[in-house]
Image (cartoon, rainbow over all chains, first blue to last red; front, side):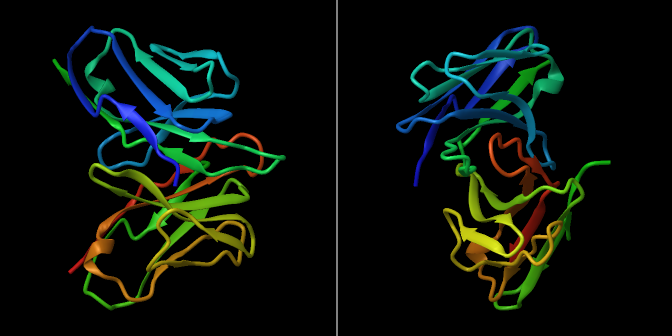
Length: 114
Length: 113
């Protein structure tokens, strides 16, 4: 099936630093979603993107829907300890009014040094 | 409170002993889905359902069954569990059509000995 390449797989950063991660696909999507998963919990939606080129913010988080519709980026500014977790991108292709399934990346594990 | 619930949260069982993991949502969502999460592999879809009595295979359906007799419930059935089904399972739901902002349950950690 379709696959998303998410990078980096993991990263350690100093508190206060900015973080960037991205997802790329060989297929186009018309929806990109970014989720965060805390230990022992299910993924929680952070940002949803519905239009190529769209740039959307949610507090310190900013995500962009790539122009080619094959990639997306997530930036976290001024990271804090509670940003620790696994971040997943997910792409979806909706067609003819029907909802396509979500395809998930393998995740980026974020660890912050206090 | 809008939520997706799963039971049990933790389960240890033995090979071949049939089990069911329940999933229920109170948001009147049409779309429901099951995923498994394994280290290094991310979230992979097992089965999904677009509405009552409508189910379809995801990427890794082998060894699993589902049913959707009611809109709110979407149980995952393992008729004869095997050790390679040891995993963390998530149920999710969303509105059908258009945007897919899926809401996830808290997860069920299954160990098959």
